[in-house]
Amino acid sequence: MAYLTLAQASEIVDAALGHARELGLRPLTITVLDPGGHPQVVKREDGAGILRPQIAHAKAWGCLGTGSGGATGARHATRDPAFFAALAAISEGRIASSRGGVLIRDEDGALLGSVGVSGERPENDEAVAVFGVQTAGLVADAG
Image (cartoon, rainbow, N blue to C red; front, side, top):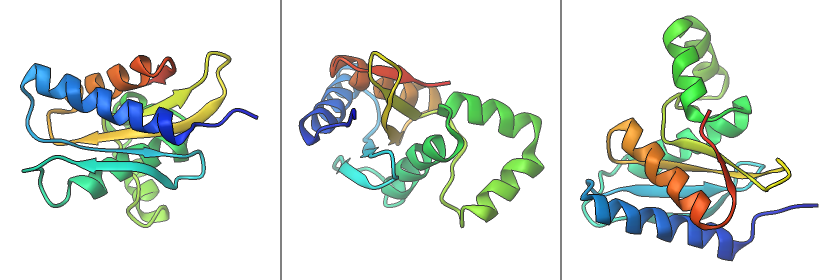
């Protein structure tokens, strides 16, 4: 059975944060969840907003809950906002359908977990999440 190690989860977060600094992005919070939605690594940069950990978690958790990357969720939420309002209620507010949430897979496609990034524009959050996952030698499924 494939699983995400703590070392891999840490590498994803550290690579993503390093990339964000290279790009000059605003302070971020990044979380990596295991397939059951439990946090493995959470880092909040100095100056990141106080809700950023919850938003990053909701982006990552939403990917796990729907089985698709945040970009897919964002597109679907735009087309069918009533359904995604229902999902938010069903999940007790734990889902954020937005870019910046990415599923983490191994080379065979097995689900290892997810990463959520919050603090910047959604496309930038997604870009640093993908960078972190790929730097760890894994496959980023952004949707």
